[in-house]
Image (tube, rainbow, N blue to C red; front, side):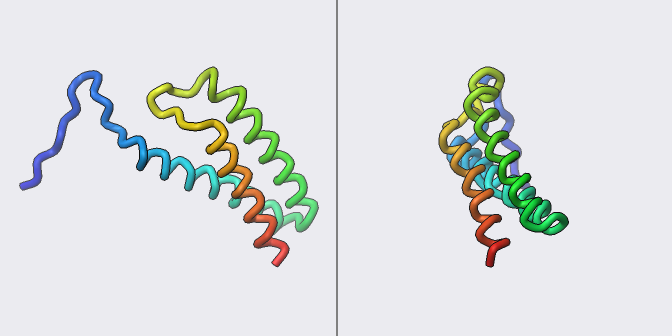
Length: 98
């Protein structure tokens, strides 16, 4: 039978590379999904509104909120997170346009 590894107190059990990968996929698809959903129901007006709100959210969240309140153990690069949020917006606009 497979043994379960138990972390001792204070041990860092998060694999930083895997956690960062999952976080960037989540950042990308969160804004991608929001922008495409707005576009589905409100067409280009929805795309413009959602894209603007997502860009504003990304900037405020990554450069103001995260440095003050995010957990230091899981905190990655603010710029990298911001770029993946913006990439999701850009990809959604491109997909909607095509």
